[in-house]
Image (tube, rainbow, N blue to C red; front, side, top):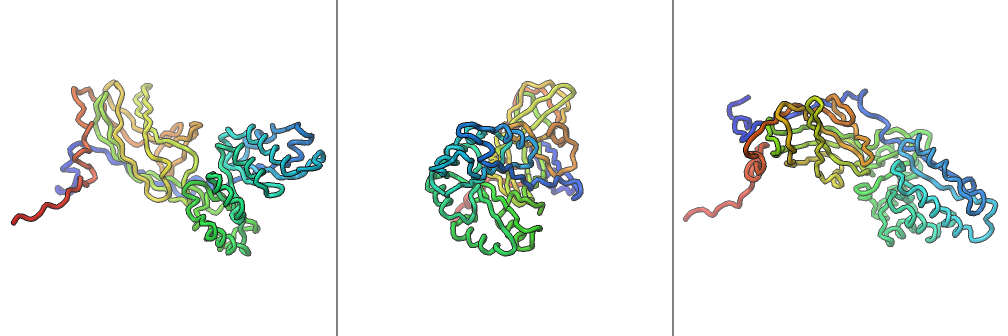
Length: 362
């Protein structure tokens, strides 16, 4: 270390963790694959008002990133007003399954392409992501008129990939992926070069074939203070990188764990996860600590969804229950909190508050 390096001028000692990424063979795969959970109307409602929806729940338990499709196969009891009857069926299914977090999305399929059917999806699947066919201009316009966000289902092949690109341009859909997933359905036996290239350009999150879609989160660096005070402050600086094609669409939160023997503290952070897309993702936060016994603690971090399942990180650090070990930190008993406002005038990475240049003296 050079005598002029930044570490020699730090106002407080820090620990810098730079994890090694997983090898290619150990990296998490099939994250970008999905399964259709497809059910026929005539099987789920064989008689008017008689519903058999338990099969949907069973299918969600085994499917990978399940996408629900309700195929409008006419039951024998339907005579007139088939579109309205199908809309009523969609509303019943939505009221039954809308709160199920295992469901990744719902593909909008209709009998007659009517507004009544579209509104049934919009009204009954309030919390689920709806997928519109990228080439269905009328549906996309209707969803925008209803101010309902939507993802895209792109049925693409080596023959129609140009038409798919034109649909993105015609309906100004290039930025949909920043808020809702783009799902690629490859209709060929294998994914050809044009489909693969355009899927990357569309930031597709899921596909029915494995072509390396989805997110891939890595911790590039974590910086934290070497010593903290009980009931004091813990400054943390995270540098993540999403090297994948798409963002993470489910709600998740960043947590830090401090553990010493049987004593464990789990501390939530307030990172703006909704704005995390691809590339570099940085979060800095000073979190307050509880009244902790002094000693050396293991500091770990984890990213958790609302159901408490965790996001695997592409790093070699040991982990348990979703928490990846980062290093150790010393907790001491002190009379004051020297780190509470440490970033007001000092940045340990070497950047300082900018000031307007002063006018030269006459």
